[in-house]
Amino acid sequence: MSDDLELVRGSDNIFRDFNMPNPELEHLRATLAAQIIKTLDKRKLSVREAGTLTGINYTEFSRIRRVKLDGFTVDRMWKMLDLLGQTVEVKVKVHPAAKPPRAVHAHA
Image 1 (spheres, rainbow, N blue to C red):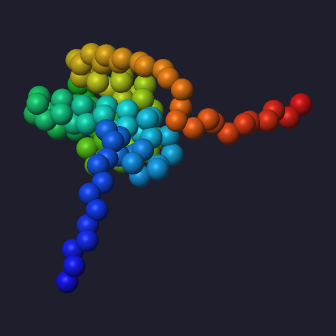
Image 2 (image 1 turned 60 degrees about the vertical axis):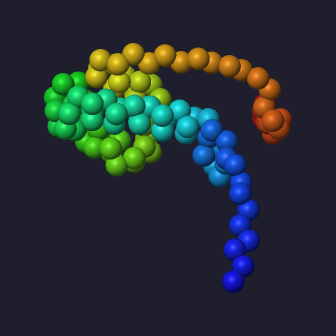
């Protein structure tokens, strides 16, 4: 039996590595979700306690714990962290994309 394996080194963004749509946005959402979970764990807060503390329905914290991020916007998760007493700091770098975007034609 031959174990011909090829080692492929990934980038810092698994969403990009798997050619998923909007990889940078998904990476940011996953990072914010991970920070919410980390904050809950560090403060030993249940999702219900987090809901009571923040005024956000506990089911939203539950969805984040289960990594069900559909429907969560970056600003919503940012607000959740803010209400949990966390400050989010973002560093933005803008550079040309690896491949140019498709042309979008406006219809008049």
